[in-house]
Length: 238
Image: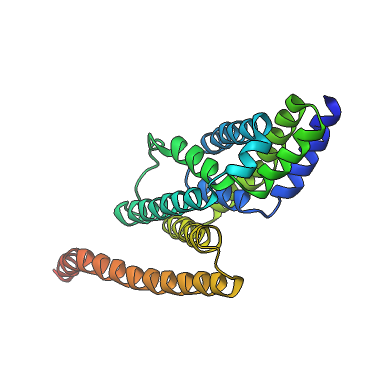
């Protein structure tokens, strides 16, 4: 069992480095407390690897990857819209508030949808066929949580150094890119050039939208500050 734990931990940890799971974790870490994100990742990892270990070879042959990919894409689009709207509606000088009630469930659900049928899950299936299933389950879960903990550290560092409004924009853009990638690459099985083109077009459109939104926000601030500035100027003149 110890061998299964160590082998699974190493394989999953290396497989997760630079994978979309780390980027998803980084995205959530930009907006939520580290323990909310890490606990959500842990529960999702337990669920995904538990399924792959217990019924792995049957599930690997019958998993409906396209419907799951479509559901994941829709979920990421919803998260992108939610994050963008939250950033637009919250004033820049607003105090820190408690976590949204559904933040933890968003972390868990997005990870489950993103990891079902992914290469990490398939690797866990292969490991469980040759090693102790309990050891593979524990090792794979710990490996995924450890890899994503690295992304959480990076996210917390960025959270301390970047403005709140910019963090909302970055998180919204990343969620949008995840949704486009899940829809084109996994749901539609589009060729790589088409996937890259869709991602590039998404980034360009999001950049233009961000510039337009920033200009509108600047105009609103100037309009609100106008009467106050005029009154202050009149008082100084008297």
